[in-house]
Amino acid sequence: MLWGVSLCVISFVFLMLVSMTCMYLGVSFLLQEYTLFVEWEVVSLQGTSVVMTLLLDWMSLMFMSLVLLISSLVIFYSEEYMGGDFNINRFILLVLAFVMSMMLLIISPNLISILLGWDGLGLVSYCLVIYYQNVKSYNAGMLTALSNRIGDVALLMAIAWMMNFGGFNYVFYLESMKFSPEMEIIGWLVVLAAMTKSAQIPFSAWLPAAMAAPTPVSALVHSSTLVTAGVYLLIRFSPLLEGSYSCKMLMLISGLTMFMAGLGANFEYDLKKIIALSTLSQLGLMMCILSMGLAKLAYFHLLAHALFKALLFMCAGAVIHNMKDSQDIRNMGSLVTQMPYTVGCLSVANLALCGMPFLAGFYSKDLILEVVSMSSVSLLIFALYFVSTGLTVCYTARLIYYSLSGSPNLSGCHPMNDESYFMFTGMTGLMVMSILGGSMLAWWLFPAPSMICLPLSLKTLAISVSVFGAWMGYSMAEFGMGMRVKSLNHVGLVTFMGSMWFMPMLFTLGVSKLPLSLSYKLISTGDQGWSETLGGQGIYQSLMSGSQITQDLHKSDLKIYSLGFVMWFSTLLILLMIM
Image 1 (tube, one colour):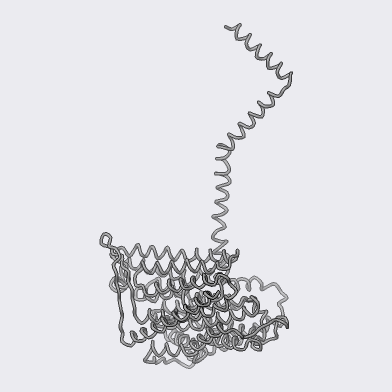
Image 2 (tube, rainbow, N blue to C red; image 1 turned 60 degrees about the horizontal axis):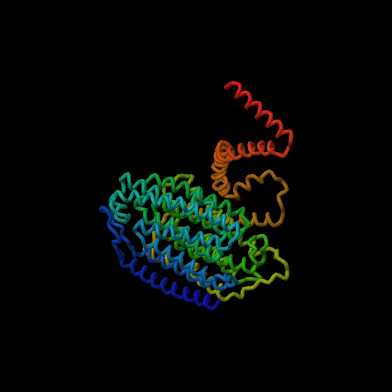
């Protein structure tokens, strides 16, 4: 166990130092507009080179810095959260492998090395989702792995199409080959791969299912690693996608994902699943703004979102840990009196998610909504942006109501406290970043403030939608706590909205039921049916029945022997007479 403690601390210190170095280099590269491109030719085959490439620019360095910062704090937090686990060393090594795969993906401008990082994320995420070895975790892991395999296949096909250009470094071809049919196909394949990794409709079912993983893994996966890989890849490919049909399709799908996840979170009672659906909603927001051609703004929200979402999961983990592994928010109530520091951090993260002024989420979300108000988007997309923002505040207000106010719903002798040094340290670091990170990133990425001139109605629309959403969330929570619906008329609608539009059922049972039933019929009529009847089993039955008759005839019965002798003798006489 001592080695486990030292492994956590060593990993924390190392990752933190590398994170600080990357942040310093990233800001320096940003100010100097400097990019470092490193190439190593591994093998050359018939005019096509396989090259290991590293792209170090301000975007990759700042993202790496943030991923390493969150990873270091999550590993430090895991020291206490996973303290009861005998295999904590294996857990930490898996997390480190996960982070290394993400690093490889971030600094690769080459589709071959991107695939290595991409597949590394998929493989290690499967190992982490099934970490608690039970049937539910196994099913969630299979759903996660198989959903992501679709994206892996799309990326492999994109690599095959890159053969047309004689190299795999896509950065060389984004502008020059933008209008070629091959590059358009590659754009479609990359969009498909990003949609699977970032869980857009119809691949959304795996993201809430991945909550079977330990909470520190959820904090890492849902903030800055696995689910953001698709968004980051599209940010890199954004010059290719601008104005294409794939971009328009992505805008509609991501807008619907944002709305669907926000709606579903308002009907969910599992604390971790509410935060997972919140992640899905924010991913939809990033994809939607990215498909409008605003890649830098999507990148800004990606970084800001990572900070408060990791904090949100850490606080949720602390609450679950203290509530003896209960994740139902209906079992909470008045936690602020028993866990004031944890609930304070939770409220900061929730307010940052809502876009409370001067917290991390405000700088990116408010800017996104104002830019959308200025853009010439359709009424449907405009409505999806603002309704989804209202739904975000709605489920956040509901969550704050259940955790802060109300009467305690656990037994009076239930021990709950805030005495957790390692967990506190991780949460405190991210709370500071959730408060200060948004303004720092805004000053670095947008040094010259943009002048956005809007009429009063549009300028105040975001705050109006947020206030209305908060009122709705509080009212829903009060209604749910105070009384129960006696009529079953609306159960179907509530089930539809609360189950992600039946997506988990449609894309598990819906996909597998027909092939499984057909294969059962084929095997029962073919391999186990006629082929058995006409083959081995049929011959076996014939031989068995024949031998049974022979055996019956050869029983020691004098009548049978006499009759046999008479028939044999008669036949012999007839033959002799004929001859």
